[in-house]
Amino acid sequence: MERLPLNSLDNIRDLGSIQTRDGYHILPGRLLRGGDLYHASYDDQNDLRRIYRLTTIIDLRTDREREERPDASIYGAEYVSVPVMEKKPALFWGRDRIEALIHFHGDGGAYMYQLYEDLVLGRRDQHAYGEFLRLLKHHGEGAVLWHSMAGKDRAGVGTALLLEILGVPRETILEDYMYSGICLHDDIQAVLRILEERRVPRRVLTNAKDILGVKGAYLEHAFEKILERYGTFDKYMKKALGLSAFDKNFLRDRYLRKNPG
Image (cartoon, rainbow, N blue to C red):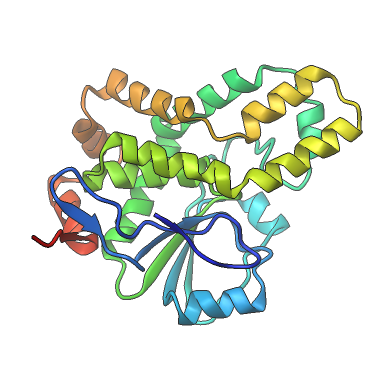
């Protein structure tokens, strides 16, 4: 995995060169994951188009998020909306996330565990992730970028499902997921400083760290719930995501290459 050297976008990464369990690797410059493109500078838009040959953008955000923070329009790139969690209140994904954190009275950790469970078991979200994966299956030349707001939760789960299908070891999937915490560190710290300056109760800071943070336990919980409900990931892939063994092999053929030697 490689964080792209962009100036205005903190969490855009290339999954290229990630290794599978059976001696293959993901082709560089094909699969990009990230956060929204709202603040994409002109130079970064140019780099995504010319250097990384971006041809498709898959937006996993809700209608409200897209209205509040529309993606920069990148010339030549097809834009596709595949909303995840469309029917769940986007408490911490909109522009009012500071106020949402202050007025949230639940348990932040419990909220996140439930969120990740809903992402993989909710019927609407299973359908959305299935559509996302089929778009990758049919993607042609150039790179495809999928994103949520920050690029850690909805995009993180979508990436994890894809990597599992491609045969990437679970520890590598978790490593890629956790790397979002490094990319988003400055943004998270900025939010925490604002909350501290407003002298919020300690529980608000604790909840903010749980909700904004990137914790491997959240993703592990999602995979545990998949196995608890479906028994195996292959059954989940077929029954929940609507993907066949042929689709799985097609994705592998499209994005993997055998390691030399």
